[in-house]
Image (cartoon, rainbow, N blue to C red; front, side):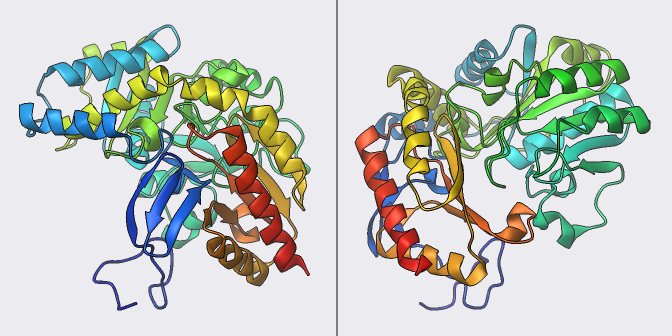
Length: 403
């Protein structure tokens, strides 16, 4: 492979290896190496699957009707998408701020929280990922934060949802820290190992936020749009956030779009106070059209119901793999493997030979002393037979590199 004229993300460039994508259909994508079973939804965004012609046609139709816009523009698809998102949110959510993706959804949620509360501190977890922009990276707790430190002032991290930690440390941190404006939480920690909170977790955090005047922000960039068996993952835990951030599967990967959904108790503040947030391509028509049709596809093809129905089968299949601590919520699951860096690399190659794509996490990413994890997040249109066949191949690959 010749050297690429563009950067590859999250890695050293020497020897970096890309994938020649050619297209795809359903739960498979095509490359110059062959047809891959996608058990990772690419980078967690392809919830609607590959080759969704309805979404492609919606983008084409929007391009013919309106392709250029301004942040202040009003047009039918923009209004319809905002209304559709608010209809999926809990009661009391009244405004949407559109962004270019999940990272700057969290970035703008951070700004909204500061403007609303007048406080600059924010709490998040060490095993978390909130995005690649500077503020979002500062909120992030995993290895990707270290390279850009010092980040924004006031970012506080706690050791929630980690081995040996009972309950949540967030209420204690709010007791000790002044000027905390917001708590940012992924309902389920996704990219860092699929960590599912215990019963009562979010209620405890919600009560602590209310006592100390902090906003609760649920980061649904990875977990939203059916991934965890409900439209938003926080619904599985009875959580009541003040802000909801979205990205990735909002368009099924067919457009670049994110959003911040804002409750009335926060949104009404900006009736008389300036909202110091803006983006040139705010609610770009092509991405809005992609998102609007993607939401319809999720509903019409009952993909979220499918994710919920496959949760127990996925747990059972993960339990059959050579590994420990199988876990799943909807179609987001993981199993731990006692592999170091070299063996994880070998596992990746074994899966590549089998034309299976998923996500492998090492000790560095999981903030562990050793071991790794296999993370599964297929498109929501996958069938039980396709899921079983794919995970059988995963088991064979693990066995191959374990000897």
